[in-house]
Image (cartoon, rainbow over all chains, first blue to last red; front, top):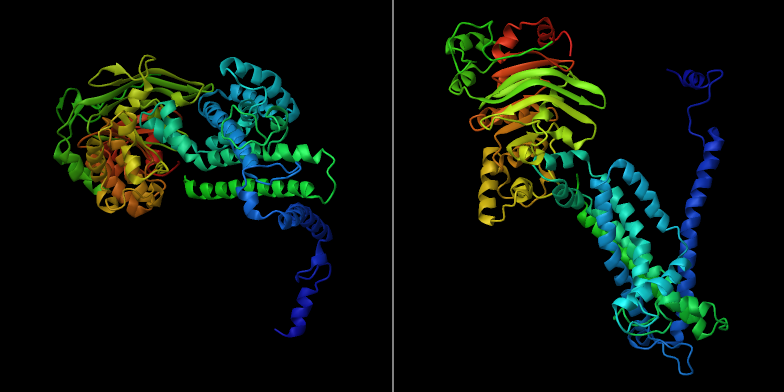
Length: 313
Length: 301
C-alpha cells in the first residue's frame, strides 16, 4: 500500500483522524485538570501546615534544647522562669485518650457486632443514623456535659474526685467516638461475605460463635482501622478537655486528677494575648508538632496493622 | 397432586426387595455399566438398605414464593443420592432444608416433614434445634469457603464450637479428617499456613475435612465441583464415593455425568417439583417421565 493511500484512509470526509490529541475532547481535559487541582490543593494545604509547624517549632527549638523539651517534667511556658517539658501535656493527652478508648472500644465493638450480626434490618437502619448523630453534636456541648453532668455523677461513685479531672472528659470523649468505632466496624463486618457465615452456621455454630469466631476476625483490618481513627480523634479532641479537665499541666497518669492535654494548652494560650514571635507563642507550634507526630504515628501504625491483619476472604 | 417416590419402583420388578428397598442384581447393573456409570461402585454398596431420611410432602415458601411443591422421597443410608435439574428448579433449596439453612433468613416457611432415622424425628419441626441439626448434617458449598484462618483451625472449627478443649483430641480428629478428605499428605507440613494459600481443589477438600471433623451422619454437597477444574473435580468425586461407606450423601449437581459417576439414586427436579426419583442407572437409561428424558438428553436445562 502506498503512503498516499494511507493518508487518504485517515482523511475520510467527515471523520476525525485517529491520532491522539488533548484538544479532541476539551471538556474532558478541563474537567480532568480541575479534578487534579482539587486533589493537589488538599495535599498542598497539608504540606503548608506541616511547613508552618516545622518552621515555628524550629525557632522554638533554637531557644529550648530538644532534650529539655522531651525530658523536663514541667510545662510552665508562661511563668517568670519558664520550663518547657512536654511530658506533662503528653501524659494528660494519653491518659484522657486511654480512658476514652477503654470506654469506646468495648462499647463500639459490641454495638457493631450487635448491629451487624443480630439486629433486624429495620432496627439497624434506625439505630445507625441515630448513633452517627452523636458525632454531629458540637464538642463544646460535650465539654459542659462532662463538667456539669458526668463529673458530678462520678463524684458520687469516686469519693474525693475533684471538679476538674480526666476521668469525666475521658468518658465523654469515649461516648463521642463510639459512633466512629461502631459505624466503621459494622461496615467492615457486614462486608464479610455471607458464604463465610453460612460455612460457620453449617458447622453448627450459633450466632454468637459465628460473630466472634468468624466475622470479627475476618473484619479485623476494618475494625482496627476504626480503633485507630478513634484514637486520632481522641488525641486531637480539644474542647471537652479544655472545659472539663482543668488546665493545669500535671505529669500523672491518674485519671482522677486534673491535668491539661496538648490541645487544651494550645487553645488556652492561643486565646491569650501572647506577643507574636515570643517563645510562649512558638511553644504552641512545638506542642502542635508533637500532636501532629503523635496522630501521624497512630495512622502509620494503623496502616501497618491493617496490612498485617488483612485476612483475605 | 401428591407424588410419592419410593425406592421399590414398580417399573423394576425384576428382583425381590428387603424392607421395601429395591436392591438390583449385579447383572442388572452390569447391563447399564456401559453408559458411563460406575457399575463396580454400585455393586459394591448393595449391602445397605436402611433409610436415613424420608421427605414427606415437603413444601417450602420464601417471600410468598412456593419454591418446593410437595416433595416426597427417601434417602438411603450410606448411599449417594443426586439431585439434578435445571437452574432454579429448587434442588439447592431442597438440599438446604435438610440442615435448616433457610432459618438464617427471614420470611421462609417449611411445610411437610423430613424424618431423620434412626431418631424418627421431623427435622423441620419447630422444636428441633437447627444448630444441633447442623452438627449432625454437614454441608459442603458450591464455592470453596474456608475461613480466613489456618488450615488446622479450619478443620478444628467444628470441634472448638462444640466445646472440645483437649488439644490431643483436637489434633487427632483434625489429622483424621484431613486424611479422610485425602488432603493430609499435601498439607501436613503447613498446617498453620492460611487456608487461602491452598488451590481451589485443595480448599474444597479442606471444606470437606472441616465438615467431616465433627463426624456428621449426612453430608450435603451443593454443587461441590462447579468452581473446580476437571482434575480437582475427579478427586472430589472419588472422595465422595469413598465417603459413603461412613456417611449418607446428598449431592446437588448440574453435571449429569457427575450424577452418573457418583450416585446410586437420582432425583430429577423441575419447577420446584420432584418429577422423578429412582436408581441413577434407570433414570438415565429408562426415564419414566418426558421432562426427565428431555433434561437428561440435553433438550433443555
